[in-house]
Length: 108
Ligand code: SF4
Ligand code: F3S
Image (cartoon, rainbow, N blue to C red):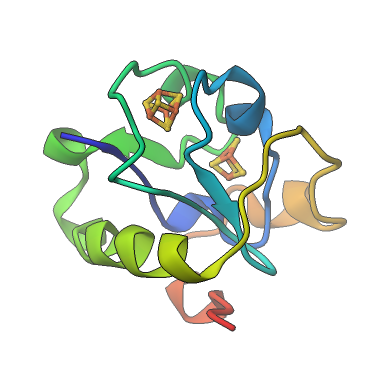
């Protein structure tokens, strides 16, 4: 089962995950990253390095965030690949511990 980026990434984008991925799984939107489930090889390297704890294996994804499986698959088809770590979003540390921020996701 592929790994999935869930709600805690929104408005943070620390991108530590990108740096450790051995294949090019990650795609970048304005305030969120997603994993392409067709490219992910399930190595698990990205999960422990995310400062926001946003990454889960499909099997361990909390119930409240199950919709992110579809969100990752959908947006990975539209958003460009990101292969290098970048600076986090300006207010990342402010948003890191905020719950219930799903409505903030910019899908364009
Ligand atoms: Fe990349 Fe491995 Fe994370 Fe999949 S589990 S996104 S292959 S680092
Ligand atoms: Fe997002 Fe965590 Fe990666 S905040 S960009 S999933 S390191």
